[in-house]
Structures are given as C-alpha cells and as structure tokens.
Length: 76
Length: 133
Image 1 (cartoon, rainbow over the protein chains, first blue to last red):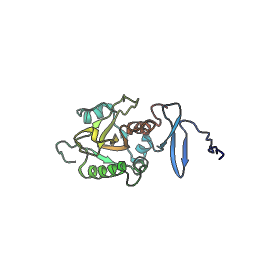
Image 2 (image 1 turned 180 degrees about the horizontal axis):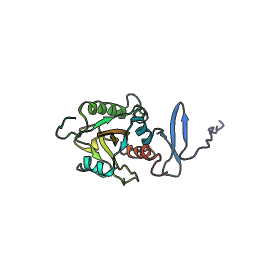
Image 3 (image 1 turned 45 degrees about the vertical axis):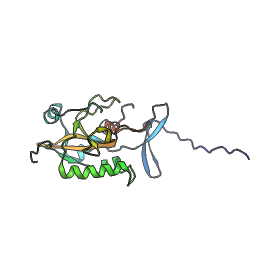
Image 4 (image 1 turned 120 degrees about the vertical axis):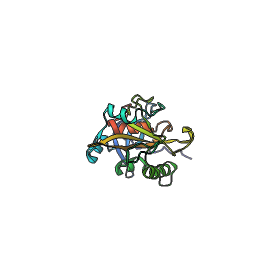
C-alpha cells in the first residue's frame, strides 16, 4: 500500500498577528519552544474600557489607600 | 455600600465584551466556564470580600498588573491549590469618588505549556501586548 503524504496548509503568519479560524479569532503567540500557538484573541483593551465606562485607573496612592492593607501571595 | 467586615467597599463590573472574550471562549458546560458563571453570581450578590488580593507589578512571568486585584475560583476554597482559576480586575475610579473593580481576565492560574495564564491575559488587556512580545 502506497504511503500518502499528509497535505499541509502553509500559513504566512507571525507572532502578534490576529487570525480567524472557523469564525473564532485568535492571537498568534509564542509557544516558548521556538514555535507558535493560538490563544483566544484579546481585542478589547483597558483604555477603551475606560472610555466606554467613563472611568480612569487609580493612582498608586489611591490604590495603596484602598487596597494596600491586603496581603498578596506574589503569584501574579 | 454597607460597611461589612471583610467586605470591600467597591462595585464589581463585568463588561460584556470582556466576559465574551474571557469566559465564553470556554465551552458552555466546561468546568472553567461554570466556575466563572457561579463565581460571578456569588460576587454580584455578596460583593468583593475575603480572597481578594492585590496583583503584583513584577510577576514571575514578566507580568505587570500594578493597580489590579485578583480572586481565585472556585470561591471560598480552603486552599489555593483547590482553586485553579482566577478573575483579575482593574481598580478604577468613576468620578467623583466611586471605586470599582472591572474584570480584565479570567482563566487558569497555571495552564498547560503554550497556553496563557489569567495573569498574562490580564497583562495583554492592560498593555496591549503579552509580556514576551
């Protein structure tokens, strides 16, 4: 039986690109092994959210005032 | 907001577009999505409280989440190892003096290799790029 090569679709994409597959959008990201991976896309950003909601980020002093007393585990 | 011991005097906001990108990327009956839906219901009812903690400006994976708060899900687990997911919120001010926490990201705290953590996704939503980009 003759071996059949697996057809390969070549994609001309780079890390940082936004792509769509099957109606879903993905960010092209590094897979930390020299290759790429697809991550569900993030297309809405904090500055746009502030504009949408009429808000602003807290200053460092304001954040310390309201939340500085809370412990943190340093995980992220 | 009432001054209840352990409760933070802050309003939680779940923007629908952020919710769609963060939570609805998981299958409708998947464990992560159900965890997020349940936690949101609980938080919208009871408000932010025990378990909320500040994020770091120098995370181990290069993330800078200064000005953000996080909580592990499912809520109320006795050990953080039993809460594999997290919400990350940005602390914001609605003038003149209304303090709010706006959802930035939801996801796994320690995902499989190649997938981005909830911290990395929050970093991108804040800074428009992943830490390694």
